[in-house]
Length: 110
Image (tube, rainbow, N blue to C red; front, side):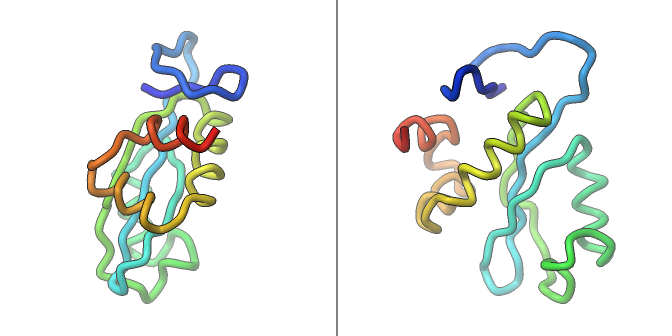
């Protein structure tokens, strides 16, 4: 699991009874990647596929879940999403393909 502590990306377990948040990427028919966060990836992806999720994805199907990673707290997931959205497409593609760990990419950016 990835967690943010003082701005650094660290591996470690989360404590407490908070919901676990995930960062995910969805690939559209045109090859573009959409990023988001959710506590239930299967439910959220089903919403996207049915047209009841993000407006950006409506009419861009078929959709494919390209990547997901358990992050932990909601605030950490939001930070992760913001940082990854700023990455060049080539870096996002490397993450989605599993060729590089998400935390490694982010550490290189600091």
